[in-house]
Figure 1 (tube, rainbow, N blue to C red):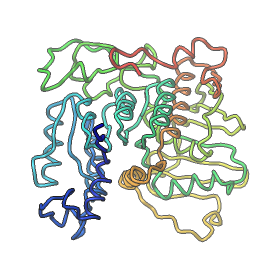
Figure 2: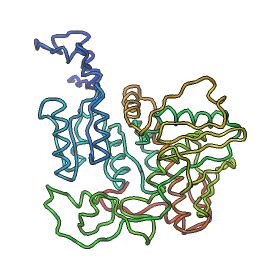
Figure 3: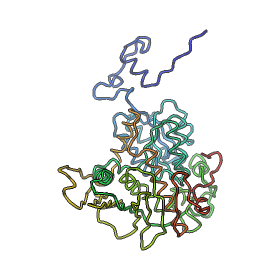
Figure 4: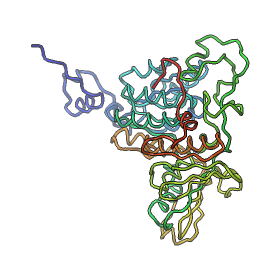
Length: 432
């Protein structure tokens, strides 16, 4: 009987080859020092080979953070827009001094590549969860921009898919890897503020929005913009250039739209995520009240309140949060500064002030976890709970009344109208 060929993972093969110097593995080829990890270079066995899916404005910034890392090799980009594919290829080729970055219109072709370890997903929100789950099933780890999901059902399926496939998932909630936000959450989570009573988040307004149906325009050639692929799982609508960025919304008609879920979800997936971290990444609140006087109050099972506050906030930059306990409080924002009820809460520690919410540290956390197979700060379970809180708040906002959520059944209690908003129909072949 013929012997079966043994397939070694790429990193294991290269490590074995370098360690043994085997002629059978390496032949008589002269290997450059960079391939062996000499002269300050990272050996191929330690590199993370990355591809990009939907690299636009935010994605280009994320890509820059990846390219700063010496152990990253960016090899391919997929985008439905020719202009973006060309731009990203130019960035990568100039970085490496070659023309090796491949371009794709269909992300499935990129995922079919066996040499790619991980993908950066920076499409519009309409595609985030669908692309992430396809990547997981293809055996890729992923850094996925937020909002990661469009509804409660997607949030649950996303987390279950990552657990089942064992893939490393990092949501683009980069504030989890900034020292002042991390310290503020630590104070709340570890009881340094006393029993936690209230956590405040500041979303970008409180409106239930959906993408509008704009007048038809002549669609460009598929090579220039693949409109059908751009829509993906969303309901079909005629081409209109104004919807190509995914953020042109019209009020009315419900919050379950083709491309996003309104201001509560857009910024909430950052600030509510921090509140979730402060309460120990526990299941999301079980009760959500309709907005009153610029606040939407949600309550956790233990009685702690999550308060979405629209206006009149603290002057610490964007994405401010406040955590209140029985004996103290802390505030933090994108300025990089902390405000504490007492200097004693610092306990002699120095907390670095890093303003402007850079993603470099978050990207590094992701890459390290790809190598160690440990869970990153913005893992799928944490993202799932934070997104469910935002989606449920959106339901209460849209209905204009209190809704109650059961974290065991993952349904609203005795509320058929609210439960219809837990999911949306997806176009074929993009069902999850």
